[in-house]
Image (tube, one colour):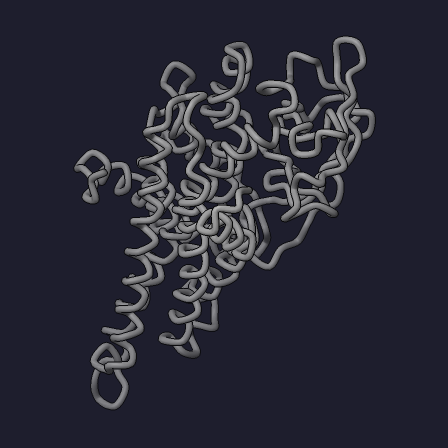
Length: 390
């Protein structure tokens, strides 16, 4: 593994950062305030090659590696200051698109990926339920085979892109006695009979994305929409997704840290107190140094996981879930700490919406909860070290 990124990889970062600064940043305050989804902006992201970042060009994708996809996510948030839109991008491309790409039949790939890459279709992933968040394998949603279709009943909660997605990767129990080994994954279109969008969920942060409850009431799904092998939805699909989610999507939180560091450095050089810039004060300088240390540690951890994802044999190696857990804890908790410290350095204006740091804190709060809480990640890490298994 090389610790220095190449010129081509840096170009991916720079292009995403410039796109974010040009197309995303000018409207982020208004979209956050009104919790507005911007479909035209999504189409621009697709045209720029962001939405289809990791997918092969044959399906309309950009053909980026996992590491390059991380760099694109980080650069996008660095320039755009928009964690919510980055989360919507990740929910569609990573949580929905990657399992189709890695586990789907050729017919499934041909049906979904080109229209996802073009921005015409938006995807979502349905795992969590109101009664099973961290204990995802305890889900209650059921899928029963009837002839040439499956009938789904149940509900999913906290679904990013829920109100606006065209299709969903849905986990459901197909063999109750097998517990985690009896869960399967399905592709469910939003126009399927029995599919409904439930309550729209208002959030503390990430307000430029949309979140909802999803309901399945005798929802009919053709048997050819089974994604991957029967009963492999948790031990196969979900673990694949989580490995990608806890690296590529968390790279957006790195971008938020980088944006906050830039903001703090500019402000500290411009703000004068006691006849000198506050950047001259040791307390401020040490806070900035700690921000940079946290950022560099997290970036190296994320890139290590991405490197492992790029080195995996399709259908062979297991996702690097322990390393991904380490990266997720570090990056998510660092994102909150850096946002909090940025507000502290800026003082009164940091508490306002003028410098965007208050929104970065609201957005960062979710990162220690979603995709497995910090407590769950620490449990994964500890079990690995203690060699007591999963």
